[in-house]
Length: 260
Ligand code: BTN
Image (tube, rainbow, N blue to C red; front, side, top):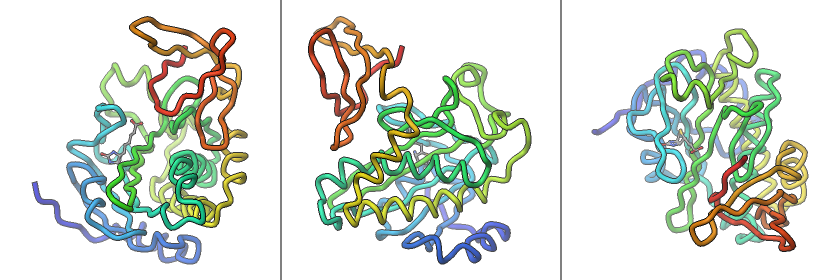
């Protein structure tokens, strides 16, 4: 399916115009009423480009999951980044999704007052329900960073209702999506700047402050076909999760982990 960009909704154009100075490289926003996945559209675009859709017909989550993306219920967006331009490209690349998680939490907080927890590697939760997720896809020297934020879950299927939440359901009032989007872009601009300048401690400190489950939470991991449980023991300087399993301290770098 070929998608054509639409004009920006007037309210969004106005907000973006007024926030231009805070958006850093994220000034070119391509808006679509419907796409398969914003990550696919962004893959062909230059660094700094932002793709936003009202609806996705084939939204992707991590590890092969689908990201349910009904119209009017969430923010489905992708930004094109180049962490290789950092003073320390390897570390910037490994901390990219942590930085993005911090930015999403800051954007939601700034626009709505809702305080969210980060859960390693890059989910946003309120209590035990997921509010937002991040999917980073790399091609050559660029990373397409896609994020989905649930603003209302009115039209979600019942099985998802149990596991997800939205800004509106948490606050008990209606919330305008576009200020959340613009504040998230502004926060992404600040945190991307931190990454490019090598200010990794600022990112890690902010992430740790918002991630209570990174220390002392019970998790399980499949090892040789059986589940081994352990207790989280923080993240290291490269963003890997440390888990104490018996007398060993394991370093987990991918998301193959169950939170118990
Ligand atoms: C996850 O938690 O599994 C990641 C979800 C990422 C969803 C977003 S919505 C915008 C972008 N386009 C996609 O197809 N996926 C990401």
